[in-house]
Image: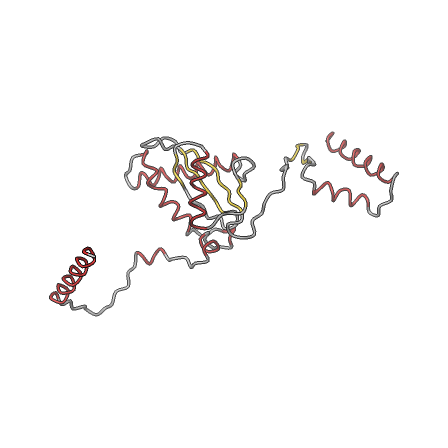
Length: 236
């Protein structure tokens, strides 16, 4: 309550000081509008100071415009791998999971180089300093990822240190999982502009009701022709 009173007095003094020098129409309104948008001004709510960023946040409007990435600590594994590097597109949320041994720039450079090979070089990089990855968000994400990995290890009857082998499977599911913030689209749709494959089509295979008659002699001739073609190709 005391901080609110002090703020009101300070605002009134500032407005009065300006009015003694110049006349500005709707000065009180302009004054509050200015400070409400100032990133350096410490706002208060309920007696507590609301932390504001020192720099304007970058909001991506195009794919591959802003690339965020940070490290997640996953714990012990079968070898020296302890961390997962997560590069993430700022607009489509598409990300990659890269297992690494330590937190160094070499891993980040290699990940950025591989990302640029596949998708092109991003315009803006958001690193661990000033990144959108906040500590609480990273901790929550790490806990969820660790829980998911532990369940999958038990399901596939793998050792707890073999979580590295499950990263491609988890990353594939992240690519093709519907996200509410993308209007119920998957991250791969707006990023690659390609239709999402239906994962259930791998389970149900269409089959004709008619019986197929295979001529073994014809198939043997085809195999012989293929073998001869391979021999010719190897000789050349």
